[in-house]
Image (cartoon, rainbow, N blue to C red):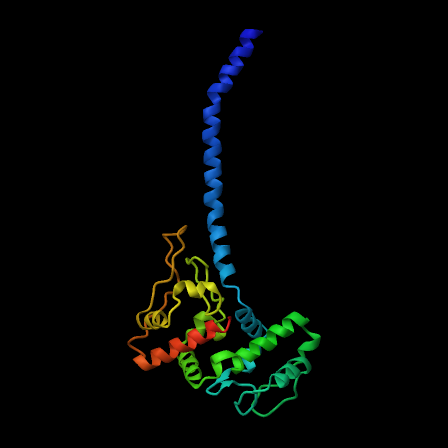
Length: 245
């Protein structure tokens, strides 16, 4: 009996190193599998933004389809102008409006369609689009936003730079918006933004998929815009990102 017990102890002792190796391999495998998800979640958390979320809410509810930006800002009225009274904007969103000349139809009353939180985001998004917040009201910024629209910046960075356009093969899985910390990780200086606009920049590849080429890169606009236009565009982008603060 003693001999059998000794044999079991010896066999267990011989198997112990192998168990440690298998346990270590299992832990490493789990870490490798989970690390990309953690990294991507951390990156997307950095993209969270009150203003970006508000503009995205405005887009997702179809507001930008009927109220596109014009040369004078957010087109709120049929004449292409923009309401400069936040009370009027909130009342219009809450109670709706009848058909006015130049608009595709009547405006629905969102008070019965959305909750208070969504309503507040709609109003904030309208404030941003109408130029009622921060430096957007500056003439230079308005010109820069017009250039951004003409160059198609919002096609990739989202309406008013709210982000959310998919870009497979990148760390965050999407093109970064102008709000949140992920944009600041690209560059924090005005000169840096000008350099990216002028020279372009490859999208940041996901380290866990080095073989996958990102679908979208930042194109270079140095041959399409002069130095003044680049400065105005960069200033507009910087003004949007600064609004979060």
